[in-house]
Image (tube, rainbow over all chains, first blue to last red; front, side, top):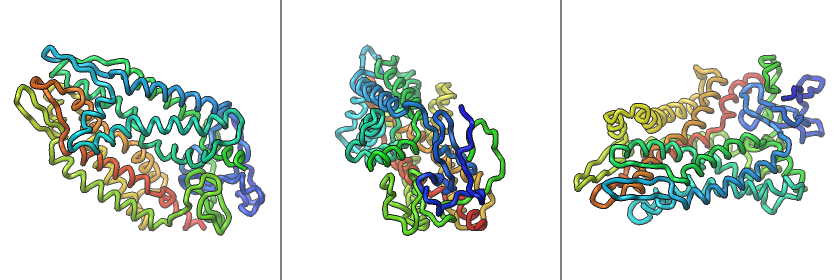
Length: 223
Length: 217
């Protein structure tokens, strides 16, 4: 990790807001502290001094990599939805369940809302996020102009983030395994491992993501 | 500015906020705008600044909604189990006790923390943060900011129990031998988690620092 001081203070030692280079100014999205961040070298990371929010962390070729990882996650998600993820044997009967079954079991009856919510949290929203990241970042990685509505789509992808709960679902599977252990014998299916892989890839992908760089690139290329 | 590796951590540098500098900053992408600011951020299109009072009202409204639906989530059954014609219902807490009786202490702890400890701490923490915006607080801003980050990070994990119920209900449909169905508490608990997440998201962390900023300028 390189070491630089991106803060180029003006004579007063503070960023001068009347300077024409308002584009170089960045306010910490969390606490509003103002910084002058012209060009942060690739591979380094800048944090807010008082609330330690990461302001920017550009990485080489990050956009292409994020788009590719999002593509991988989307494919894994399709596998995770349709393949069985748990297999249960009890009293001579075998039951295989896919994620789709989890959702469909509530589809009739008073728990439709719950079914919709579960489907949204573990499948629809994560998938929507992967697809919108590909839509926004693939043209960026290739050096093209942003796709139509890329800015709105990326803002939506960011909003969805806390609501995509694939990793929480995995812990839920683990707890469920132990809860029925006394009732029946359970084994994990291929979809479970697809889910685990998907969660790990998502974690790596989010680690590459520098929001400030993406926003700035979108803004510049839109003009 | 601080570059990682903490070389110059702790060096007192004067911090000036965008607001103090007479600028309007976008809380989403950090873009700053001169007064008069446009209605939407020039870079990311976010609607700028609904005003601190409005955001605080939203926080409290979602918080109260979350607390209200948390009550039935604990009273009514979460799981309805039928084994060989014998039906039993269990609430969240009874589910934890069952796990303890099976000897699964680790899992019991996970469910207890996710379903009871985290929601209760979240209610208290969000309430405390929202109320401390208006008055002198015992906790300094950095500590309150840490608390806010923890609440934001941890809130989603309460959903574990809802997923467990969904998985069990999908999996255990073995006709006469055993069936598991969700109880009404599953819905109210899911709503409670969603409402408190919305509450935490409505909170503007700038408010934590605003009092210090006002004192400085």
